[in-house]
Length: 95
Image 1 (cartoon, one colour):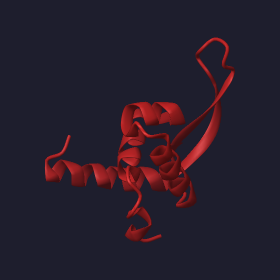
Image 2 (cartoon, rainbow, N blue to C red):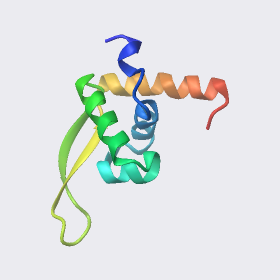
Image 3 (cartoon, rainbow, N blue to C red):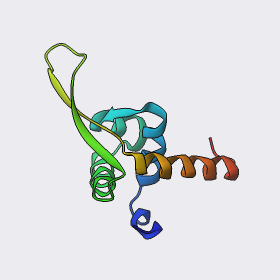
Image 4 (cartoon, rainbow, N blue to C red):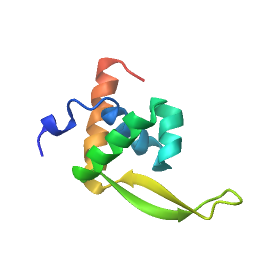
């Protein structure tokens, strides 16, 4: 993988940093808190899975009426990339 694997997909870098901060999230939470666009979220998740930067697992949901939910979290490689991205963001003065 090269850096070009992360280029061109809107929202992909924000998803990495977000998952670093929250540890895991389902697709709807990522959409609600980050992109506000399911298409952007889906494309970002698909690309990050292809790059082996995130992984999907099935967890029991905390809400009544919903028993299982898919959640996404960073792989070890994804954590390394996200930590470096967060450091770059801090250098640039982002939050």
